[in-house]
Image (cartoon, rainbow, N blue to C red; front, side, top):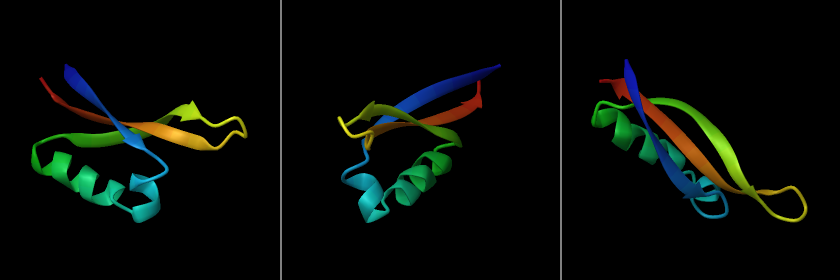
Length: 59
């Protein structure tokens, strides 16, 4: 069985700066495995504003 965490990140800041790699590494060092990124918020023009980074580890 796995447990999951969802880390909300702002696409307008963290992804433009490339910090998502450091965030994935940080959670990986804590035993979490990166699964996917799910867009959760969009602007009126279809631009993604926020993501959930999904991590899992065995329970």
